[in-house]
Amino acid sequence: VLAPNLKYPCINHMTQCAQSNNIQVQIKCMQTFRSILNHSEASVAAGYIHALAPRVVQYLHSESARSVGSDLELALTVENLTVVESLVRLAEPQHRIQMLSMLVPILVDYLLESPTTSYKHSLALHEHCLQVLKQIGPQYPQEFKTIMAQSTNMRTRLESAIRNSQSHKQPLPTQRTASQKSSNATPTIKLKTDFRNFAS
Image 1 (tube, helix red, strand yellow):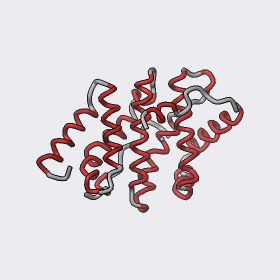
Image 2 (spheres, one colour):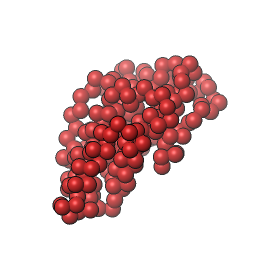
Image 3 (cartoon, helix red, strand yellow):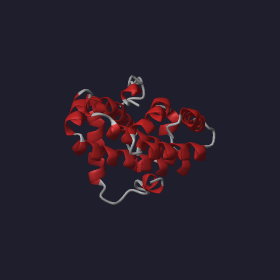
């Protein structure tokens, strides 16, 4: 929808849905946002990115996003993470490390120190984030190396999670199930990304 008289009301409606108290509405909003991001014309997605992307990142830094206690809460966090993954792919090469510098610390922060003693939803989120991190490394090797070199704590935490995963070969419950059904440091990181880089 490119016509201004339709586009901006749609963006406003999506913004309201993203702030809804109904988790199912929020999940549907993120799914719709992802479909818009996949549109063949970048100009279609630009306005939605400017309006919604900062809210997505803000949510992922919240305690609600990491403390998942139900299937719906898990699905909502995973949907928001998947949106940021899509934004990484859409970013121009010179801006990609900026997006990854937000996503990777969030993913690492969601990793559990003792996954074997955690609740199933937290464990599923841990496993989802670990798998995404394993994909990001080979996909964006230089950017990933640069980000990891900036934080010993992040690197140590990720290495520990990988070792724990390798020492428990049996599949973890609900592995990436939320991601399949619906189709990444410290929580003190400030939102500094300028989403205007996604030009209309």
